[in-house]
Image (cartoon, rainbow, N blue to C red; front, side, top):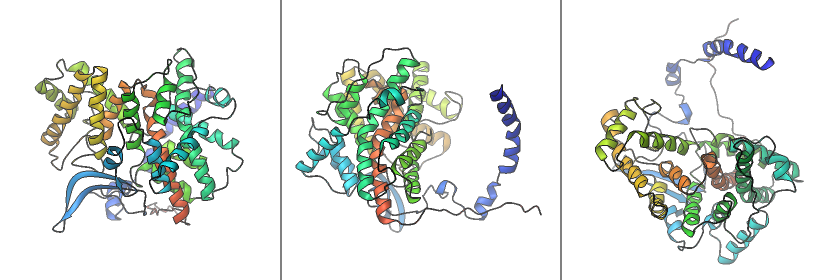
Length: 443
């Protein structure tokens, strides 16, 4: 009764909040306020400096900014070079995590030492899985992980110590623990809420992060080299993406307040789980399922294009007029992560016998920019982003949709860690952006 009472009250008061909290759009222009810290051209307001990564989407020619194929750099290395330098049977997550956090590529000895360190702390406190993760399981694995991260702080005797050495130690532990929090959180939900069989495997210290994730997820613990290599590549591509993305900026804001590592990472998790940030690939998968149910021949470009036109005209799918996975806030001509990932998508699709589905994706990749240009008169360039294919990859790997955003977090904890450490070293001021009051004085 109390729940119904407060629900009824708040529904009645919604209109009051809307009336008193609405600010005229013209005032943002009048005072030069950048909504979302972005100007009308989509360029971000400069709020900090970083030495961790760089995104390049345009060049200057004859004094004019010209769009170019997107580039992503980690610590001075192009992401293509880092991935291409890996051998066919080599997993790079740990090596590139070291690069992002420490600022330099490890020697063979340093890489081995770092891998052994990660594997040695890839474990949870005694009975933590039973007493924390399995209590109140939920399909929202991001919330499950966030609860677990905060609870882990109770086991840390130096939780409040924000010295760089201690924060580095905490970050390394969380990087190692995140796969367990994600997979065990899903296993608990899968058992208690979906009534499936329960299995909890222990991580294998001889395996890479990507291999451990697949092993932990599968009842028989088995996976192929291709599967592990594709997942490893996905993790590398999602590790870091500049200091201006929402969750990384959140990391720096909370770090600047002097808060501890666990609170900082839970704040970043809360940011990432938003559908405008980390949940984009789920929306792509929902759209693709809708397209499959309305397109009979995946290789018939005319039929595919006709349905995409219906989507853009708000006559199909969710009626919002968006082709999900197309376009990016920064990149216009191409997303470097998608360019790299596509090769592995083709390889995995062939291994899984999913060439028909791959053909549909490839046709949408080709036709969607045409449809958007024709219907929306947008000619600056629209290309697929990394989320366009990542959901398809996770599906082929047997990773359930409930874990899609969690896999993003398993990778992005590395970038968050690097930015937290850089913020601690370089800045000694709390981040306090200005807000101008347009409140009407009543007396």
